[in-house]
Structure formats: structure tokens, C-alpha cells
Length: 360
Ligand code: SF4
Image (cartoon, rainbow, N blue to C red; front, side, top):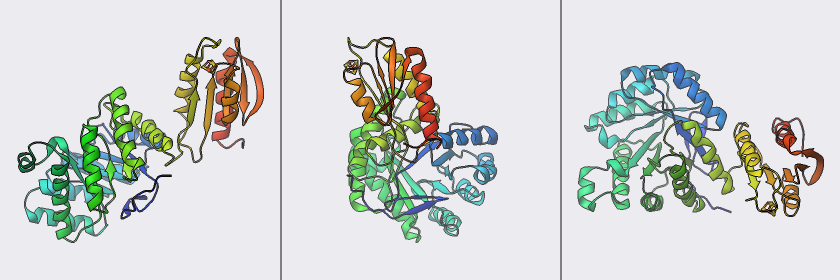
């Protein structure tokens, strides 16, 4: 059982982050924010996959203007990601966004910070301070001889202080790096000195192979230590692919059960069905299911030696034989089918259950 750090809860639209609430999955659109219909279409796809909060890059006044329609019609709370320009931050707040990602130390004079705080204060809009090892302040790079965990923590504390000095403390913090050991050290350090919710991520994690490994180790290690309140898995390309990875990290750690646990055997000389192809197709189809609200275990096993045992332990399962297979539901054999009918029959059972048409 993971004992989570109790952080200050922060409200992002309808979603609470921190304070012991379930770990929230978030992502970021890669559409042009000015293109309202493409952006909303991607937000809908993210929501269907299980994303709970979405962040959008706001590069100019037209993008900020587009936020009005996007924030009003998005199925997810919307966070505006803004660098340097305090006017864009104020404009975004006026359009009805639910959160800001902004480093107050990067927007210049004190009065600009005050204006941003005045804008967010009324609606209690949270600000995420996002320190990135790749863009640490020059003085900190010089002081620490490069991007270090101590430098990242000092940077975050500096941004936090600027907002706290203005009496604003509805904050979240992230300390991302592309190096997993560096982000681990930075998050552990800051976790000891602040109670604001932490947004975890490995930045520029890469394409699917390295991104999944880096995120699983970086985010997963911290979550296992009880650190972190919201996560973003970063993968190059379509952000929708990040969501199953995030759900799987949370499921594996028993933090949330919104994705199906798929067990499949490695195959061996006893396998007499095309199990690899079958398991891959099952996995592909399971990813299309809506996020779950309870645990679900599916087993795809190659033979009658270990197969039936595992298949019986699972909620649904297949154990292959010679060109045939047994279909199980909660330990009971419910059908003996030719190989080519196994996939459809298994998926039919699972879908029926997930859509509430049958109970286990
Ligand atoms: Fe081999 Fe059967 Fe084990 Fe699969 S379940 S690895 S086929 S013994």
C-alpha cells in the first residue's frame, strides 16, 4: 500500500488535484490552439481515452482569444500554457480557462506579476510553476555548474515566493527533466520542503519505446514513494497515445484501476495457436474501451498446461489448444471454440461486461 504525501488540494475546474484525491491524468494538445475545431476534437479524443485535464499552448493573442470557445465547450478543464507574456496570461484568464501554467519569474517586472495575480485571484485559478532542467535560469546554471536538482528546486522556490509575496498560494509545481535520475532527485528534494501538489513528468521523454520506459520509471518511482498528485506522460507525437501509458502506470501501482490488466504468456514449444497475434489484437481492442471504474483482468494463454489456471484467475480468459481454445469467465469454461473465433468471442464478453450488460 502506497502512503501518499498529503498536499494542499487545488481545484482545476471540476477536478481536484492533491489532498489525497486520486492521481489525475493530464496531457497537452499538439494542435494549433487557434484552430478551435481541431483542438476541441483532440480534447474529446483525449477525454474518451481517459485524460482528465488538458493543457494548451498559448502563443499569441489569437490563441488566447480561441480559449473562450474551447474552455466553454471542452469536456475537460483547460490549462493555458504561457511563457513570458503576462498579457496573454490575463487574456487567457478572461476567456474562462481553469488553470495557468506560468513561471512568474519569467514575465518581468513585479507589477506584471501583480496584474496576473489580480486576474487569477477572483476566480481562484491555480497556477502551475513548471521548472524545466533545460531552461533553468542562467544564474542558477552558473551557481550550480549546470542543471542540477538543487538548482531546479531553488528556481521553483523563487517562483513560488514571488506568488506567495503577492498573497497567492493556489499553486502546483513541476520539476521536469529529460534525465530520470535528475527529475527523481529534484522532486524528492522539493517534496520535503513544500506542500503544494506536484505534477510529475519526464520532459522530452522521446518516442514510444524510450518515452514509456522513462515515464514508467521516473513517474512510477515517485508515485511508489507517495510523491505526486497529477501525472503527464510525454511522448513525441499524438498525445492520445500518452493516456493508456499513464493509466497503466497508475494501475500497476494499484493507485487507480481504469485500464484492463492483460496477462499473456511468453509462448513456448507447447503453444499451438498463434498466440502472439491474438494477444496483440486483444491489447489493441482493449485500448479502445472506455476507462474503467473497477479492476478487470484478462488472460490470453497459450496452452492447457499453465493456461487454464491463469485464465481461471482472470475475469475473462482464453487458454489455447491445438487449433482451438477454451474461453473462461470468472474461472468457468463458457465455450470451446475454433482458434479463429476466439478473439471475437473474448471481446464480446469483455465489452458486454464493461458496458454493464453482464455482471461477474
Ligand atoms: Fe508455454 Fe503454456 Fe506457459 Fe504459454 S502457458 S508459455 S504455452 S507452458
